[in-house]
Length: 491
Image: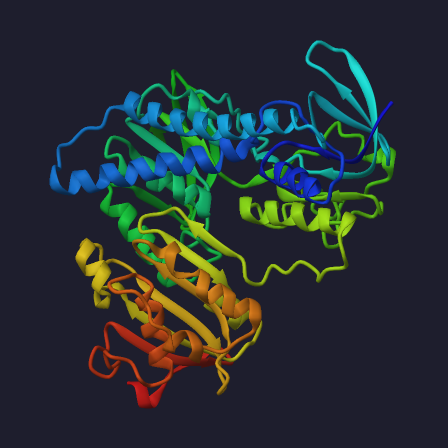
């Protein structure tokens, strides 16, 4: 029986990163993937959807100049496929060359992994042949798949999930998106931005993006409506079914009224579920948590030599989080003692229009936790780079502790190049520092990140534009016990 220092189950972003980190420690590692290297992160998830988003925003920009411009679906599909092929090829060639190294440490096997016991894995190949391998440690990184409601028949042709987008052969004339969280709003943004699809978005809550602050949701909803999308606010789905190559769905609104709608396609986007079936977790005694995901303590399961990373925990379904968890798990296995992994300073991007970047807490989280705080907001119309790009819709918002230290609790940026503005603030949160050092740094000009600097200067009462002059574009206030009060010397 072949023996390894580490067996990684799952070749998506998390598993791939974990296997590569084990090589750094000189460990013999086997990576097992049953389908395609890269997983959903390449084929049906982040890379494919974000390539589609990039193309959608380019088309939207062209349509601002040429309103009747029509994009060719095949050209867009070709671009997405090229991006997927490029990334897949990079990863595959990398693995192939690693296996040709003179002092070989990396091994790869294509097949389905089944845990026999806490050290033993059985691999079933596509042709049905099986083999058994063993390892000192195991890392489970099997990812997730779209959640499907029990009462909806998803055929991935007419009613689809993100997995079924690749089955489209043209832009639908109309589409309904079920789910108004980040991913649902992203897909609504993408398809409406191409200008060919009339998009409806079903939102059971009073507003889209319920986990974010209302000011962010308002900007995104306004832009969706500008792109001829419609949000069914406060609507509950009674039924959805495919009929005669179209989708019929019925909504019930808060006032008790019901209404039937018909569209060409439906996209289900209500979260993801972990891939834990048929893994043999029970054979090793690996336990699940109350959400039905694999229980873990800082990436380690209740079985000391079995670790877990990525979407399979559903702690936070982000590629950067999954990769970080996997690398952290491997260091725990083979490296020196390290600090517990923290999720406080995770930077994330919401691929909407405009783009939204986030790190740390938002306002409603601070209020819910009873944390006294200060908020500073700066409109994009005051930023020279945004003005130069003619992209002035959006704002910067930084939340700090309501004391002289003014430690950063969180930041949200809504607007063009928003993601370029958050990493410096993420570092301050990570190191628990105040704001003065970043405020006094030389920032490049013209750049979006100057908006961060100006926000911090406002808090320090030394901004270039004065809040008491531009009251509609610069705002500072404190919040305590649910009551927000303008900061007197800044208004």
